Image 1 (tube, rainbow, N blue to C red):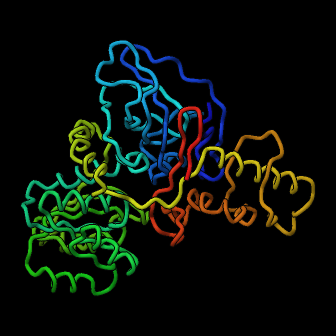
Image 2: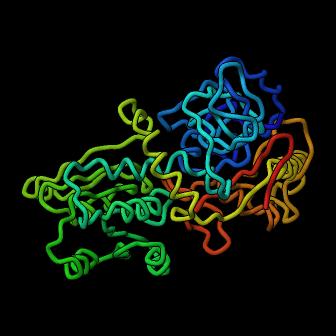
Length: 395
């Protein structure tokens, strides 16, 4: 069985290996065997691979924090699922593999929908739903401010907020995203730049903004806090900037803004995930929540990249290309070392067709990754790893 694993924590483009592992055992009582169809490459996957995420597996370990697949076999006592049902892969069961055994408790059959979108249901939509629950003072018609509005969480939050009768104030980094997010339901979409707060107040007046959602940290936190109404709540759930949270002191002192953190897998939050999934699964299945997908890769794609890198290492080891650097023809197949993806050093050695996946696994700054896309190299979209029971899928 093919799987993507790590033997040590480090940069994803260096430490990921395509491995041939033993088949999982037959499901025991209360378990099911799942054939993984799709698993997204998410920011938290990359953090886990680096070893900086709260979830830290024993090594070597398969990676991949979420995904979707079909039930292939059922253990004794499982009567709420049947073979062929599509289910979410349980969170942090390490989904970048072809098959896995998981407890049946907590699994339920998903509605028919695009499996690539369903693969992203496990983390971002419930995160968005539960973030909206972090203020006890939200009323229909209130505004919720968020940054990273083009992210998976951001797009989910727009849809869920609208379904709850709330309005969203959405900060983005690029002007071309303004009409795009307005089209999916963002009530006010603003480029995060000088003068943004004045523009917001001119638009919404004295309307209540009791909740702010921060996925960026750094100076972006101060912008969200500046928008909040008196005694508003700022919830920090990610740190795309890699910087400490910054807030103007008088927003804390005079406005009495409350700052709190959110982690989906905190024991106090995990118990709320099933209800959040029941709310968000229909929105994903109907297309109300939909995240643009940059590309879908087969597992064998990783094998090809490994072969290219091995050929490059063999050339360098043989005394060629030491001065010139990586060849334009790319890394290739060669020695018996572990399967690995091309690193940033080998970027020039990647073929044009290989570069999107390489970029998807490379850092672009502290805590930031450029997810591959056909339209903009730094757009924060998901890149999917497509696998299936016994065979590999892709687009």
